[in-house]
Image (cartoon, rainbow, N blue to C red; front, side):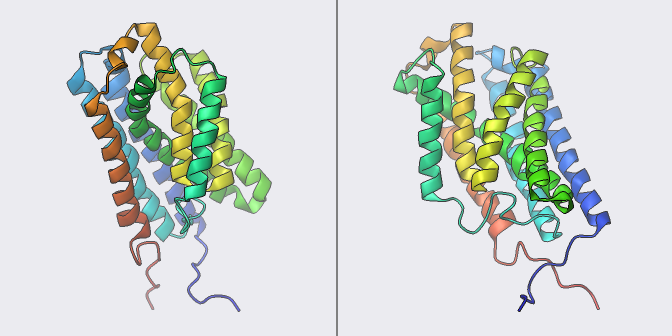
Length: 276
């Protein structure tokens, strides 16, 4: 017997609007990244503390996490997406998947031959990139990727998932055009799109946003440490940077609260009954 509480299938018009909303979110987030980072080369200026904070808070914490999850909640309530497809199923985050993500991420990081294994440097760099990684995974995979999968679902499971993985990875790469050098070059964007396929594999295999963020952050960690070496700033990360730890903690708190408010709040993911 079918459940009477199951959601009705989204209409083509609703799916079109949901797809437009996903693209609009990606465009706004990318523009905010360019305006607050790439345009003024924020990450290339160690002294630009205020600009760095503005970039982290507005482009990533506000738009990439809070607004993105608000949009995702609307897509779920419209019936265009499910919580599980977007990586926010009832069993997420999973402790086991989080542990596996950390182990795999650390192993992949070590295999790349990082220029530094100083635990304090790695802690600071990991915290610095965490808020960005959270925004990247939510926008590119939980929203854009999941929406592509939903649109292509009538063509079969394999086609929809593979296409979603490719599009999400490409979106992750393309968004880096909005960043400062060296991330905004064509060669780097192509490389990051390929790297994104690894994160796609984790996301679509686990359907756990939290585990994917942790794993994806290790991929970003290598690039950040390399950039610090190239810019001669590595020594500045040899001491614990409290602001970076606070920002990382704040990003996790905001992510968890936004998840509860927009995705998991009782009744929040259920569609309102149709009018008679």
